[in-house]
Image 1 (cartoon, one colour):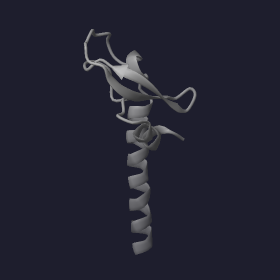
Image 2: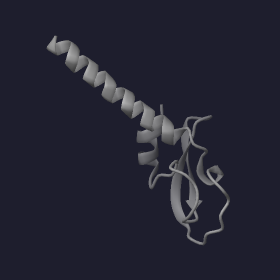
Image 3: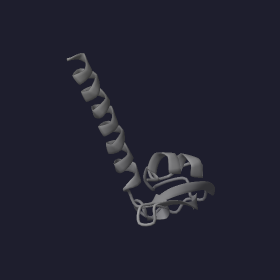
Length: 82
């Protein structure tokens, strides 16, 4: 019985992690996410492209966009790459 409870708990945690991944990684990549807003920052960032299963660099202007934006390629790949 304890094994079943532990097994179900582990499965639930994996399910929550997968749902969070999909919420972020399925959003439009980089500059395509959200309304177009003119901002003047120039932050090197990375975004996940689901169609090619890779992370690509872009420059974030500092406002607008969505959560599909990472500070490094490693963060992007860890969160999204299959």
